[in-house]
Image 1 (cartoon, rainbow, N blue to C red):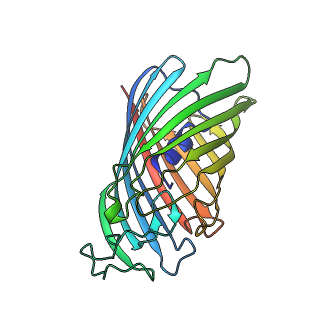
Image 2: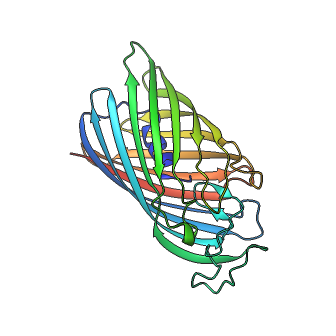
Length: 267
């Protein structure tokens, strides 16, 4: 994600029954640190706000984060290490002391609104222990590309998630997706395939689980993304829940580590 709000949403949904009809609102905090194969450590703080509406077999979601990024101008949240030719990029003459050049990695600190993410999910009606979700999503480029908070281009994707109940307490899940990453005036990226697999287990009303996530490199300058995440969720009321998670990156394309929490409440 990003990590991203979509990544956190996947954790919140993994191994859980489909939400009841109606509106739910969420807020989270996500922090990650890593060099992404560069010579500089990049630290990313994200505070996403989200809204989800479920009706029947359909769910619609929107998420928008506030972000603070400190590090290499060639590391873009949600993408990783790329060649960012924007002369106003983070640390390049945008008030962070940069000189406007792109020949060598420069770094800086900035903050602002990130990219808006929208999705629509259809849960295929099925009998028995199996479940299948089909999701279409779009990233709207609302983040300031001059600050290095985004690429400045829209992305479009599709995801298939499959899950199966094992006994009364365990759910195994996996998914595969394809994302068409948009090119901007300063950044060229490749479309990518991503996949995940994991398991969650209920402990009374609580749930604990682990998930492995993989994504192809987003450019010739990037590495693939490979990471494992452990998560724990618990209800805070009849209509709300909290989730804590921690991530360990396994390749240079991933953050070295990350952690966060998210809270959602239904109405």
